[in-house]
Length: 429
Image 1 (cartoon, rainbow, N blue to C red):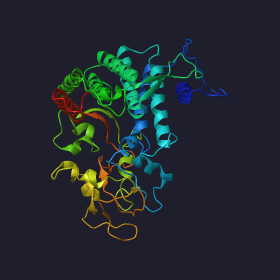
Image 2 (cartoon, helix red, strand yellow):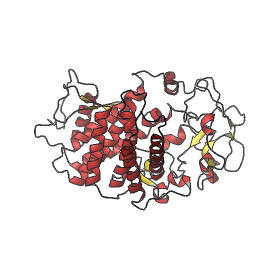
Image 3 (cartoon, one colour):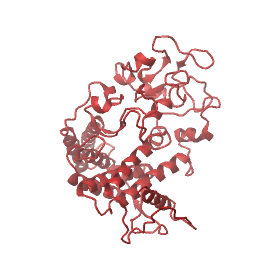
Image 4 (cartoon, rainbow, N blue to C red):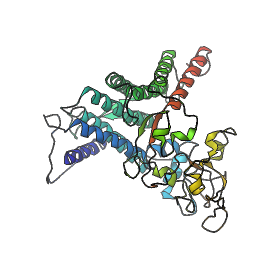
């Protein structure tokens, strides 16, 4: 089975670049599969396990969907500090919106997402696949394609029966939206209402469908820059889906925001809908490790890479008293002095002693930060996933993909857009 999956991965890579030319191979203890000609692609359960692993592959490093989403916004900046983090300008170009098609983060993300879509197509052809397994596969394929369309505005698609010498069909945003919607509706029909938060369910499919329908106005616009028509019927569907999600599976908003992200979040949070599960010490794909290492200073605990920060203008958007500004976390702050949220000003250890930078100066994180020309201390740091000090490299924190607060915000947006359209504001044509 492992050799079969490796060969399918090779086919997927060929899919991404259009065709493979002069491909030669030596079959050593391997099985070559002729797809579409009666070949057995393997057990459905094994193929679906591979798809869930692909979720982690696109999320667990700072080079994938996370960076493309956050680094291009005001929420995150990858500043150069002396000679540290120059990275040939790759991080700076993301924040400055000056990237080109050869940017390695885009290539890696494109390959991973589209490989996962093709692997989903293969899984759906498994001879032993059940209806619930088809639902899981369609949900996962919808998730991967949702990201492709969101980033690139198109979605290449290759049938399993097509050879690598055939150029893939390219779905427009409108076509891809219809494809994703059909997948999610099929998943809702086939899946159980609730499942372990690391597995697909009707509730997670409805949550993702609400996000797709909210994006429909932008994805269907003739001009990507707008104007956009948020149809009242679409907004009604978002509201209905959000209500169904909110009433299912015992979900509720957590009183303490950090319960959603601490190492024990799978047990403490009632808000999580769909996650990448992580077990302490297991070393599975989808770890949140890079989320704290990429921002913490060398002299903090853990000793980080002293990289990413947020902008002062983003920090200023939060109201005093907001939990997200900063909070002491049991098992974290008393171990290292580290607080969750925004790290600004003088940093301290667990004993309240002031930390210093590598030159012996006070470790004081400043609000101001530039793309280049910084010292070690510029930029407010962010800790969303508190470190798991029981195993820093393979932490327990589940990686959160869908949670209730996100879906409730979608409902609020849908209600607002319905009201604005009714009043003929500038959100409708």
